[in-house]
Length: 102
Image 1 (cartoon, rainbow, N blue to C red):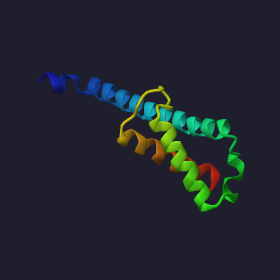
Image 2 (tube, one colour):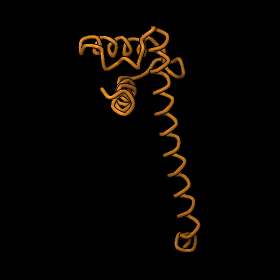
Image 3 (tube, rainbow, N blue to C red):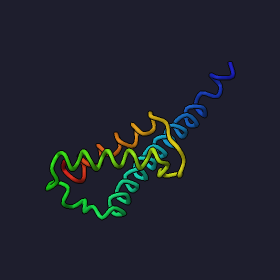
Image 4 (tube, one colour):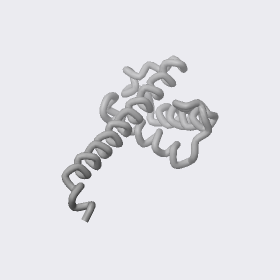
């Protein structure tokens, strides 16, 4: 049928779409990470000294960032759902593990 005849081309289309979605996800992750670093900078929190902060201080900073996001201070300056907030915080957790050695 038609699908079999188009299979070689269709696989290229599907592969391109998959790569584009992966690239978009990477860009979103990087944007959220930059957003976090901007938040720290705006509040004069030196992220290079993160390892010296107490667990309570870190928890307070995370909680304040969550409130900051809930208040509409997001990448697109819009209200976000609870699920999107979780994604911001999950991305933040990844960043902290990679770059700041929490």
